[in-house]
Amino acid sequence: MPGPEFFPRPRRIRRGAALTLVFAGVLATGAVTDALPHEGPSGEGETRSGAVRPSASGVDRDDLVRVAAEAVAEGGSAAQAAEEVVSRSGDRWGAVYDPREYEKFQQTLDGEYTGVGLWARSAGSGRVEVARVQPGGPAAKAGIRSGDRLRSIGGSPVEGRPVTEIVGLLRGEERTSVSLGLQRGSRTWTRELIRTTLPSESVTVERLDGGAVKIRVSSFTRGSGERVKDAVEDAPDGAGVLLDLRGNSGGLVAEAVTAASAFLDGGLVATYDVDGEQLALYAEPGGDTGRPVVALVDGGTMSAAEMVTGALKDRGRAVTVGTRTFGKGSVQMPSALPDGSVAELTVGHYRTPEGHEVDGRGITPDLTPAEGEDPEQRAETVLSGLGPGS
Image 1 (tube, rainbow, N blue to C red):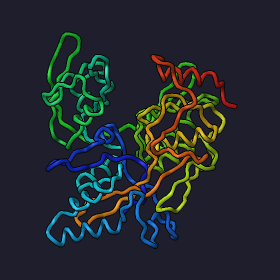
Image 2 (cartoon, rainbow, N blue to C red):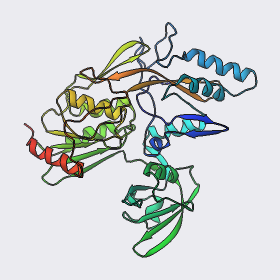
Image 3 (tube, rainbow, N blue to C red):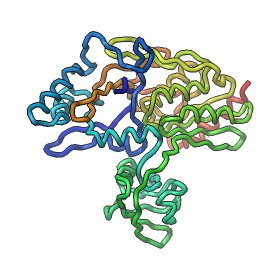
Image 4 (tube, rainbow, N blue to C red):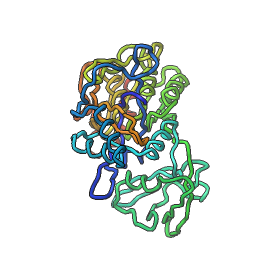
């Protein structure tokens, strides 16, 4: 079973007979979920053994597993019993997942998702547009283009609905169908698309006017850290980097540390505690410490993405631009239940290199765009003012 986690999962809670994904938007927009190895004495990523201690939420993990096992022995559901314990604990990020849900989460670790290869964005006045179409995906093969208006999904109008909810409706089981109502100019039509497994493209690289490079990281999936490092190494000598972490809801902490290492020559990335034990994460040596960097963040920058932001900000390695980040700085520890489901409880919190707590507070950027000002344009202006790297 993996070790502690620093990133959000949608929390499952019970409302009557129904199970509701409160943070479904987090998953829909690409949140990835796995654990940071918690090295034991052998250094093999095992969890530490020793005295049993309660989680930060006041629930003992071993007791949770015991309650689940007793429920199974009595012919009940381990997941249901665990859900009741987690729900009573008041743990905001506590969660219980059945085996199929957990398998889906693992899929995201490899940078994959099941959908139609279409991203949505708000176009004002409640309108929803296609923001991007993934080459080779079902939407692209159906002739859908960026800028097309998205009117309905599965026959239900999407006007005025949150984009994260819309993206969640586009995702689903592989080989299932979903109908999309679309409009281009005066033409309206409906297309039936078959969902398939697609790469998430969590890291994209773009050359900006003036020679700077924009590295957009939507989530820290497996391999994303190395892709960030490759993008920095491939950038022209002295070119600035705009690291866009807006809407990045987290990911694998090891990948986040690798991404931070692209801009640091070793040193502290973050400290964290697990069951009261103080631990630390360090950057790999050899990163590019010369070129100027601007990190662009917003209220959707969460968890492992906040860890990267805090490290670059506190270490004086980047100017941060945007709005206050989400403030998810807690650590979760998953525990296997007898029926194959997985329960998680908050066991601690992480802090930036200067010791600032993130959970419930977020990170305030160095510069906040004026009302109505385009954040990305402001970030580019700041980057150009930093001059070439030395």
